[in-house]
Length: 63
Image (cartoon, rainbow, N blue to C red):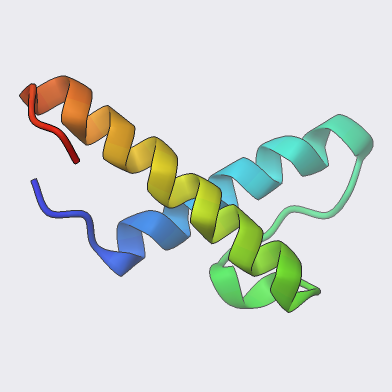
């Protein structure tokens, strides 16, 4: 399975929304709604790591 930028962005938004739900922050609808570039970049980095690990686990291949 190929990891697309759209998949990574969706994962980043989902992670940010989960974190936001813990402290009552507004929900993001897409990657462009991040307030700070450093936050957007950090969630994209984390989402890519998690998605690569999930793909690796499901296919038995190293990401």
